[in-house]
Image 1 (cartoon, one colour):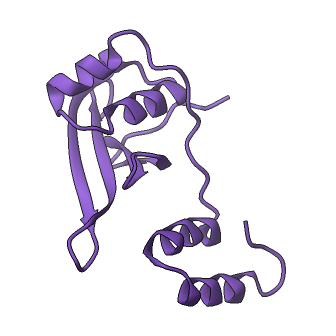
Image 2 (cartoon, rainbow, N blue to C red):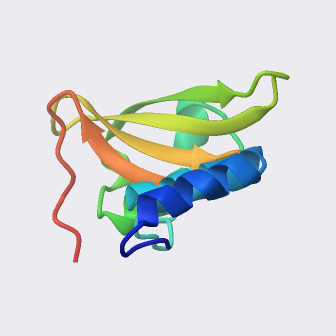
Image 3 (cartoon, rainbow, N blue to C red):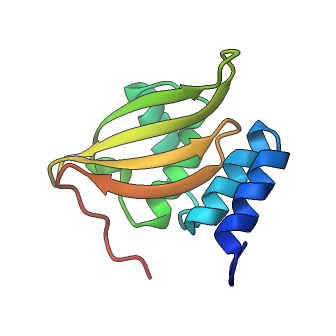
Length: 131
């Protein structure tokens, strides 16, 4: 991770030199993002997510939810958004997870390989305290 004096300038120079994938990683590093905590998905979690929205990233989403202690039984809906670059290649996903226990959604942001980038709450949802 870049830091110290000139960290932002170093990040920008590295972004100018790097390719698309490297740029995404460096942007996350420059922004101070850290991947969400991961834990073993509870039994049946991936199957439950597959029934809501089949996607190759469901295993990573299930692990991310387990990492922040959100049980899959609390998931009301799952919808994916995707990011594409100019040629049309997928460069990332957002998994919007609606919960029965609260309004809004928890969003798991993933890269093009389904590696979790971050997790955050939107529209009134809250993440449980992570220990």
